[in-house]
Image (cartoon, rainbow, N blue to C red):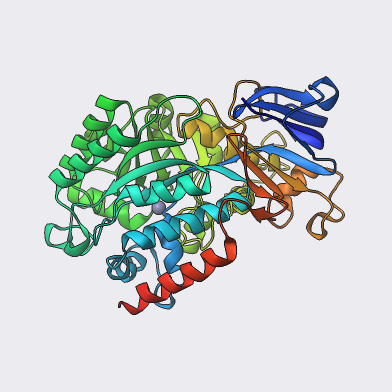
Amino acid sequence: MSTLLIKNATVLVTMDDHQREIAEGGLFVRDGFIEQAGPTGELPLEADEVLDLRGHVLMPGLVNTHHHFYQTLTRAVPAAQDANLFNWLKTLYPIWARLTPEDIFISTQTALAELALSGCTTAADHLYLYPNGVRLDDEIAAAQEVGVRLQASRGSMSLGESKGGLPPDAVVDTEDKILADSQRLIQKYHDAKPGAWVQIVLAPCSPFSVSSELMKQSSKLAREYGVRLHTHLAETEDEEQFCLKKFGHRPVAYMQSVDWVGEDVWFAHAVYVNAEEVKTFAKHGCGVAHCPSSNMRLASGIAPVKEYVRAGVKVGLGVDGSASNDGSHMLGEARQAMLLARLKEGLSGFSLSDDPARKLMTAREALRLATRGGAAVLGRTDIGSLEAGKCADFFAINLNRLDYAGALHDPVAAVVFCHPVRADYNVIGGRFVVRARQLVTVDEGHLVEKHNRAAKRLMEGD
Ligand SMILES: [Zn+2]
């Protein structure tokens, strides 16, 4: 039994159903779960550890719904800097084919360290290349050391160039091997209980790198075990053309044809969807991981996020892989989501003076996507808000800093409107991962050194 008292936060943002923001707020935590959330005066006076957050804003941990951790090794690769999705992938596949188990371990720690410093407490990762003995186990072991909750997606590619797919044959696997490994991972790691640190997700990569048969077999296997399904969908116009030509369907109809709609499915991007397809997602409970930075970086397009929210589709935010972002900053992503949604309104030719009720996306709406939205997309009811019974996953930012100078009229909005900053504290399941702006569970300097060495070796190919 251990207890933690967090007190005197300038404002506690609960993200509960009433959107309560509590002045002089705090939390009382027991064994990794929140026992009480409210004004400091109503909380117990003592605990095994007490943290006074006077002058800080206290928020629920952010939930990242889409990433490829390994790509932190290939950020800003010169030949892939100015390409669209298909060309970017074709440039990077041969480099990624050299990944080793150690590369996966190091890059996972780098991505999670960045995420933790940006307020993230749960991350979904999508690992879809398994060259040179790489296993998802390498990523899980690395995440356990950092102490961030992980939705580890067993990705896969089976449709190589010789069968009409996009990736070279050297980076795809046989479908028997993929399914056997998927089952092994579920049996070994998947934890369905509240407070789970690791959950397994089955995640064939995309319509242009996986066969219809593997899509069907993956959904069958996932549903036998009650694990979730994830894939990239409707990311670019090229993909839409590929699906029409190869399957005779637009991407969403193709998903319906392979049993890939349901409340247990979430899609990354979902940019190219029409009004009917938005309704299909809402009707079946499919979720969307919105990745604004990546969609801008690769000139993919702008996802209809406000339309999704209005239709009742679950939407979370994802930083996407670090080769198309090129960072893992969840507050930065919330800011991008807010700004891009506003740009989309502007580009639609719509004028606010025509319809004042149709508001621009607010900072609080962006934060909600990054917390409750992400939790809903991942099917987790134990995270996303600071309320009794939920996981003690939260972060805090000291408001007395240059970045927020002049913005303290509304400290909660400042967190999104102002330049994204480092979290001062990040606590996951009651354990400190960041304290006083420093990582607690990994040595940052040593990690950067190892990471740069691995990235250099990967690029040079020896
Ligand atoms: Zn992705």
